[in-house]
Length: 408
Image 1 (tube, rainbow, N blue to C red):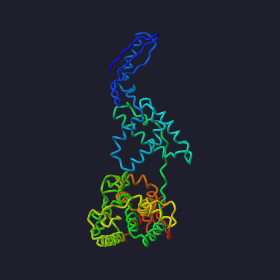
Image 2 (image 1 turned 45 degrees about the vertical axis):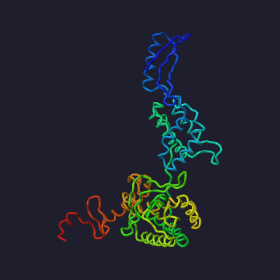
Image 3 (image 1 turned 180 degrees about the vertical axis):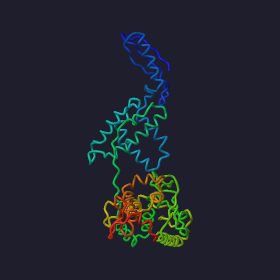
Image 4 (image 1 turned 90 degrees about the vertical axis):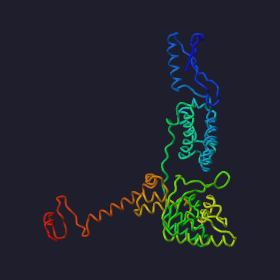
């Protein structure tokens, strides 16, 4: 980088070439004033040039709005429909109104922390504030955009890294119990058999709503009692979209006999409906579909609407469809099923994810395991050893040595 200096009154104007603005394409110069002798001005100019070379001086005149526009155009095509909707809402309602006009090069961690505080007391809302969880989601979006600005060379560093968004405590998982799940399944089975099959599969496999919607008959192995989850159905901008699973990997789960019977009955019913309409089911036909040929899957939002209807009928307010997934996981963990097995059925990429979400229930299972091993160590006669290694029972003390010499 080149620098120059000139006398202006009783001070020196220092000017350094800062390259081409990555947004506007114009050549940029930065300047500052220095009071002192020519010698000290030369020293300051050398320091100024070094700062620009190190990226410490401003690199662009772009605003936060400029960044959001470019980032959206570049990144959003690769996002899921749900992510696009959420990010667009966050940018429109929370980032642009307060930070949009701000110069990226002047944005600091302090500015962001002040912004977080203002979001917490945002007016015009029923609750008068945004929750810490909502503010944290807003902060995550802002951080991702600023990270991209660094990669593009718009700014030398990301101020969000040094900011302090609110801490969010993990939501407590309160899954329905066995009686509650059985109650709603019994109600649905009588009047809405296809939806009962859907809920039965969701409860027995722990699969997400989108993945059960995405099941095709080619994924169903009734002979081997297994299901293959390889895709998910989401509500997109222009209708339903079929994409990969949340972890972008396919996985298989074993089925119990009751679930196999439910799917077998559902298959027979779907084939009859197709024959009556003079069509057939194909391997790529969706298991849950309103089309006679299974060509289109159920909409996830429609599934949730049906769940809410039956939830009300079963008098289970507040129980979400996603809680059926938690029911499967927590029931298995409490029953002592290995975490690795539960993690595989949930489709988690790592068992550590399962542990993080369900740690409380793993601890409960650990206590059962401790009690179990303790009962084995106590022995069938409930013998107890004293601190001297002697064994006590109703007949008095017996030394370990005497027992070891007993030929019996």
